[in-house]
Image (cartoon, rainbow, N blue to C red; front, side, top):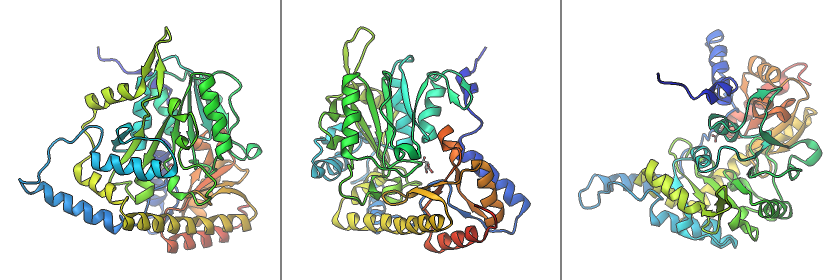
Length: 409
Ligand code: MLT
């Protein structure tokens, strides 16, 4: 008898963004002629940078010519891209990362889910609350979380991010083995300082723990004092891996390209304490289960590192940051406390009301889609996440409609 992985039965309803899509579909069925503005899922709206597009086209043409055709590429990614990543994203910022420590992939979401198959079933996992749901759900699927009661999984350690700690969680007061950190944060938009990040690295070293550092939103950092990579922190090479993505950086949400950095000094342990190099394990996993990102997509990603590419991606992020500023200013002027939106495309709005109810109010009364904070965890209840990924025109329209909703506050 073919049997189900019963861990899937422990998952809470559907994936957050699928649930939102369902609610939008219901609204549109009832109101087929009413246009809505989407500021829910963080999906980019501006086209690919010109340099990326040109590189993409050129690479496609190469595939149509026998002399320049390429078949399977290296599972870890082409050298031309890995070299640029190491140099521009890390070495230039003082982070000691080599090209062969970069694994190019089709998404940070996929990597964050896939990596945990390298870890034992009974490790103790710490996740932020609120949290990008993939970190939690992928561990539920793997059977590491226990059952769900009263809004939480029994075996997870929740790192609460609240107004009280400026949405940067405190170190756990127990020993954990795996820690997920995301800065600039999804969903709160909060950032972490070098000094605080250093404390997390020290904690991981003391406890032989591993940090998965998700830096998918690094392109939105404008405060020069903030770390762009965990590898700017001394000692992080031994206890951290980092996820990066071109999705929000260069408009690749549909194109798909990302990478994970796994330093060769990073070790995990057998039950008897033997050290195993994580880099080798991940390489083994990828060469078995993954065939690399397509050649034209990697050429498009490489173009990000040209002088013109760097200029274009800065302009892209600046555009969304200007939207974020407008969103934050409007919600603040309406009397809501806000965080994020300054070094991040997300604004975390404190509504102090039921999150889904507030979501529905904005959908039905302003025709604006947001993301209810409770979808990111218990600490998200009473909050709303607003994404700055949309056109200026739509953002302005959405903010005007929200402002006109009676009794929202
Ligand atoms: C989000 O809205 O949180 C992101 O778009 C989801 C993702 O990047 O997978």
